[in-house]
Length: 93
Image (cartoon, rainbow, N blue to C red; front, side, top):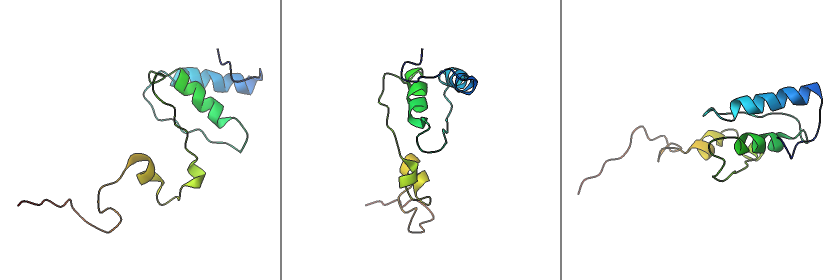
């Protein structure tokens, strides 16, 4: 069922059970862990089993993004958010 992931430990079986449980939902999932632990494999497994599996899987190295900019990089921002603008500009001609 998880062809890219090799192993049979109790801990891995528990993680794969969580993947199977969360994949069909529309929830946001945070996968964390040390370098080389297979976070991207788990992310791909979640994506493959999700309702969005036909769409692109885009990996993001969050460690490479400044902590102060990560939210706006991932979710966007309002124009003027970094200049202190308090409201949207509305112009009429």
